[in-house]
Amino acid sequence: MTPGGRGYAVGMTTTRRHVVSALVIVAVLLVIGGLLGAGLTEPPRSELHPRLPTAWLSRILLVLAVLWVAIGAISAHTSLVGKPGAAAARATWLSATTPWRARESTLGLLPLDRWLIFLVPVALLIATRMLQSSGGTPVHLAVVIGAWTVFALVLRLVVAERSPWPVIAAVGGVVVLRCVLELVPLAVSGSDGFARAFWDLPAMRITWVALGFMLFVWVFVAAVWALQVQGGIRYALAGVLTAVGAGIAIPALVIAVAGADAVVARWHDGLGVLPHGLLAFLGDPDAAVAAWTAVAIGAVIALAGIVLTVQHRRSLRA
Image (cartoon, rainbow, N blue to C red):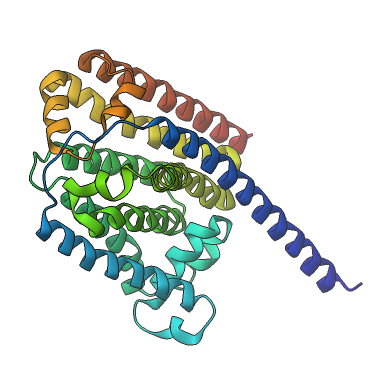
């Protein structure tokens, strides 16, 4: 066998290993998410009628999001990738579904495509959260956007001199997929009709929660995978752990200092779709205790990431 043949064989073996690993991770996350969904059986907090404007806006946004995903999936195998913006959609699709290819999928992108890789997921995330919080207080939107902002800023600092586009494409691509999933029930019946359309049907509820949980965790798996290609597994884990810890601790600290009871009460009022079963599953903890516990957990995770970062830099100097 020629050297080129050996290289091709090694590459195919590595790809198969990545695919198998990804499938195992996805299967485990789906099982865990399914168990969580099976445990959430209580009716929703809100019994109001669906908001038709919310439903129609959700349908429009869902069509645009699905179109972006479809362009990315089709561009990965056709000449459509040469059209303006198609390369960005392709990069986010490949990076989200095969994060070990995030670096190669973002090479040679034009400035427009790079901006779209960043702006499309951000705009879709904000719009989706606004629709979920429609008619209520903006606490949910502020907490979610704040946490994502902290996560992104810390991750950018950790990436430092390396290119940030692979991890931006990986995280952004998964965010788009999560928004598609979250827009489906809103598009069916509006924010207040969430439970009637999905929650009252066990199979639909379990499937939706399982997919949502899997995609939520996959955000961080994809981030680690995209960074690992650039700097190794220790570098990748250090960056993601630090960013995740900061993304938990800093918003929780703000909530705790601002008055956890008032913030959480407003948060629940703004989320009429939040089922009683979720609060029961969490034990309906005291708001202040829950906020400071989140601060502690986030700080521990961030500290673990910082320790790994220091060890990684020492090994590089050595």
